[in-house]
Image 1 (cartoon, rainbow, N blue to C red):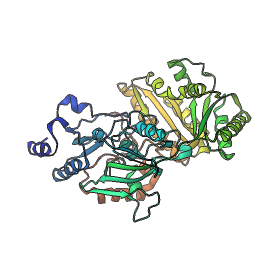
Image 2: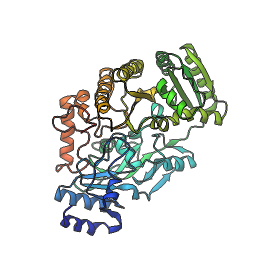
Image 3: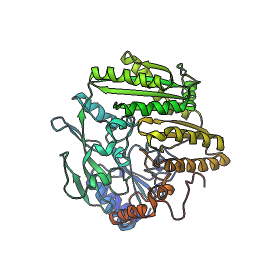
Image 4: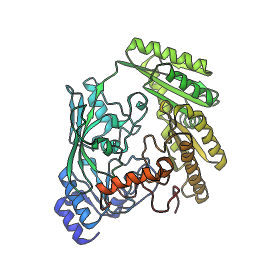
Amino acid sequence: MEKEVLTEIHQIIPSDRIFLDLAERYCYSYDASFGEYLPEIVIQPKNANEISELVKLANTYKIPVYPRGSGTSLSGGPLPVKGGMVLDLTLLSDKLIIDRENMLAIVSPGVITANIHKKAEEVGLFYPPDPSSSNVATIGGNLLENSSGPKGLKYGTTKEYVIGLEVVTPTGDIIRTGGKTVKNVTGYDLTRLIVGSEGTLGIVTEAIIRLIPKPQSQNTFVAHFNHLIDSGHAITSILSSGILPSALELMDNACIRAVENYRPSGLPLQAEAILIIEIDGHPLAIEEEINKCAELCRAEGASYVKIAESEEERKNIWSARKMVSPAITQMGPTKISEDATVPRRQIPAMMKRLNQIREKYELNLVVFGHAGDGNLHPNIITDKRNISEMKKVELAVSEIFEAAIELGGTLSGEHGIGTLKSPYMEMELGIAGVSMMKKIKEAWDPNNILNPGKIFPEKGQTRVVLIT
């Protein structure tokens, strides 16, 4: 980086929050997805004014700026694909205010999401979005990826809860959108536009999020199915019965075997699918609804149904689902994690297509996900050093996306587009749809300095590139 630029950066940020050494920069070259890109400099700002000055400087010298939280993105959201500067926002964590009377939380972007859950529940409130990385992920990253999790089925995604933001724009202005009122129709809804924009339209420096009353009680049951299609019918039967579970999770046979191999706990190796279903609300309603769900599963061919009779049993049921990620990580050094989403009734068809892709390319493909809202997580376990296999992985990933779109679904339910899915945007949105998004990006970010290389494909790129 030019000496003149470094001099100006040091006038904004003290030296102890500027990182230039190769080892330090390398720590910011990757996230939880795939790929490594080395930034020229890493900076840890502490407030909106510092970020504003840095962004203005970046515009002057046309330096790419990459905002970053904890680096848990599964789509390459914070990767510095054009070099430039990474802004590590984890030090912006001083504000976590729970407003019980107005049922709000006012938070800094570097606050860990699980801490919001904890603080809200201490006063009888509830923040529903619960991504699996919530114990390490920052709320800022969750907002910009519109993260969700198992409870998205009943309670929706992050965008349903963000009602106000403080944002540094791509040109360095500090603006506020929305506010503290749940109803707000003053002008364009810039809050919703920024949430889920993957850091391409602004850097969030404060958020106001809506909280709801904590459910009085909850319970869980597990159902085993010898035939995958039966589990799909059970999902449809439950949701069409008028019951809305707070979570409805699916594990396929490959996933079951991976978890059982990782930590044996008696999972049924012959089952093609396991459903884990949680109901929350009033205790009397829970008892009635969970028994009805169990009956529906039996009617659709479940070979085994178990309703938790204690909190310990409930946690044991969920432990298998929570062990999925560490279990499949043990299967190989490289994990490609996707989240193609289809309409619920198309889950059996999508699972069939995934099995065909697994067999066609002879890959280690494991599937789990939030079956209640059709959000599946196909994970390919491989080794990026195996060039011939990585070529097959590229083709398989393309076919996964194509299958999701053909079945009326979407490229991403919660991971975002980032670097891995950008070549397929036109497949889902069409040329005109992608062009409109590009126009918004160009209007907000005329110098294309904020998180460039994300969402929109490089010229001529038509397929995900995992090897170079």
